[in-house]
Length: 426
Image (cartoon, rainbow, N blue to C red; front, side, top):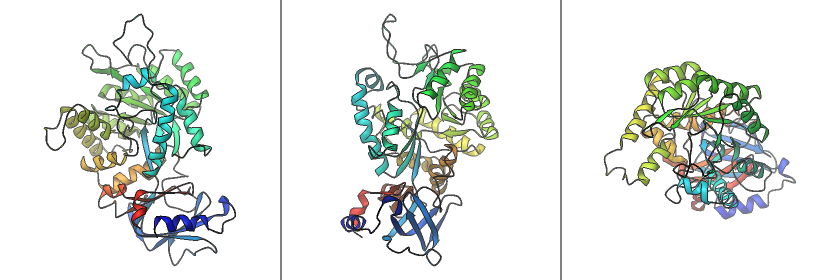
């Protein structure tokens, strides 16, 4: 069905209201995110914002008046989930992080973020966890609510508001010490951490993000910031309200302290070793490796992948990711998108496969695994009756070639249909 015939069929569908509208999707393959297997000969019935039925065609009847969408050659998957996003940032080769925080107005950043949200959705990512507004206060809360209210198109958004940093550790830096420079996060220490966590929750944070280490050592190297006791106070305060905690940590000691404190996910993990990854696996703490951001930053510095020797940072990233896999650490798909262009989060999944994961495991990380880690496992992440109709149809078979995820034909978010660029070819 061509893009325009599909649009016409949707406009002429006999449904009298969104809640009663029904679509029948008939893809060549359906990805079962629990088992990692592909199902063939399936139908998926969407009614309103949820999946009404999914299974073999001879068991799933076409409801009267439903609009059938033929997806021959396509694989249908749960909508993808990006677990480490910054919708209020744009690529650092366009504007440095410091200049975005210090020079760009909040209004400009929000306007740009609305475009980022749309690009993310159209690339097949129907949910994102946005881990810090990076100097834009609680603009991420408003962005989340604008999407939820249908004011702007975008993925479902979980937000962390202002990340929490130890006083003196975070930036921007390099200014006259008498000048009070706006920071990209909220500094707090000791007993005041409890108040700050509560305040962030009160202002709308779904997650609490803490920087367990940062580049504040004598040679600008990464060192732990908060004490074990401080980290525990953050996690326990957040947990008492039903909020989970994510920790930025790139040193083994920062990762160890955050794991023992009870965080749900550790972001980056570049300096992890076998001992700390074993501890994470034992405690059920997941790793968001942000491989794509690391490669993007090196490329901004002049590295040409495939032509130049691999930078030491990338070698460490490969080694730590491999150690995490070997230790059995749960891997979530989180790219730190915003460092590079929104709408390109598939880069992370491609690199996860390049660095040692199977394509099936990478797809599970971006669907059922991320859904569970974000506390949404009963709502999204699987193609099953009763789940929200967050679905993605792509040309080809991403279990054989993960880059097939770039060939988007159709995206549904809670039953609302968005056409991808590959729809023009059908």
